[in-house]
Amino acid sequence: MDSLFVRAALGKTQEKPVWMMRQAGRYLPEYRSLREKFPDFISFVRNVDAAAEATLQPVRRFDLDAAILFSDILVTLPPMGFDLAFLPGKGPVVRNPLRAASDIGRLRKVNLLQDLDFTGKALKKIRATLSSEKALLGFVGGPLTIASYAIEGGSSKDLHRTKALFYNDPDTFDRFLSAVANVTGEYLAQQAEWGADALVIMDSWAGHLSSADYYPMAGKFTRRVVEIVRSRSRAPIIHYANGASHLLPFFTALNVDVVGVDHRVELSEIFDKYPDTVFQGNLDPAKLFASPEAVSQSVSEILKTVQSRPHIMNLGHGVLPETPVESVRAFVDTVRGNFRQ
Ligand code: CP3
Image (cartoon, rainbow, N blue to C red):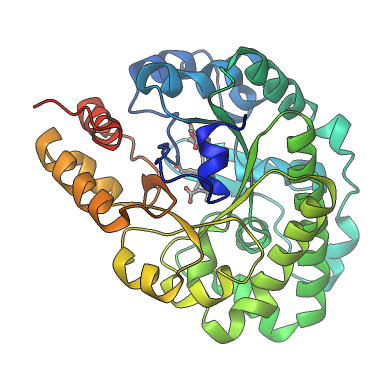
């Protein structure tokens, strides 16, 4: 039988699985001691034993319904020819960004089995350890979100270089995004073959786009990813974007199984508008800085709104680094109906 997570993702149960975006991370003391052993984030991710251990830590501690591979959405950039580093305090940096048509020739052909073999080894190792009641999630970034790091050279508040490339040289934009979409789709489908039970597409920054720009800049390429995955795998697909409620009409038409929403969305409103969509979310990650009682109250309110609808319980965005562990526990315990004050 499929895990609770997979059944909920397919709309086949009213029982609510629970997990958290960025559930492996600095708020956990056991994560901090593992992280200390590596000089940088990429060598941590490429170490199969460490990545498997980081993946399992939050599941062990909170008995979550899903484990998400410990990795990053940007791991496909180095094999494509980008010089990526994660700098302390600064986040991801791409030292050779793609800004013009002449940069397209620099793109390298990715050999997934070779270039990303550390993902395959980690997924197989985790799947062999994890109980069959728990789902193992593979993930990728949405092509727009991944490409934005490659074009901007790192994180950006407004994606203006990415938009400038699209407005001024749509052909180069399209060629680059198509290349990213193909690698992303093949990589995600491969993760299912390596043992992932469900697949997440995190198009975190799609919310920066207007409704007019979304399809030609992002949606079209996410569709390509979904198509590639559907042709090779039956694993359910979850889509997530942040600050993007204006784009829900597009997300609900992407042929994915679950649409993740952030905490700015009013669940009762989208439930009325989209009666047949399974959603995921949407507790504000900052709510976890409130007392366990207040967290439990907010989670109960979400559950009351969701009622008998199939739904996946999660935050509206990733767990923040300073989050108190007791509040995370209150979140999970309330979903399971065993929160004790
Ligand atoms: O627990 C999990 O969810 C699995 C691991 C995971 C990471 N990143 C680990 C990570 C996942 C699923 C991601 C996805 C990711 N990465 C997204 C999409 C989700 C979202 O948050 O919107 C994005 C946009 C990125 C890009 C990225 N990676 C940024 C902006 C940063 C720096 C800021 C930060 O959060 O620290 C990273 C680095 C990163 N990815 C870290 C971790 C644990 C910190 C690395 C370190 O130890 O220095």
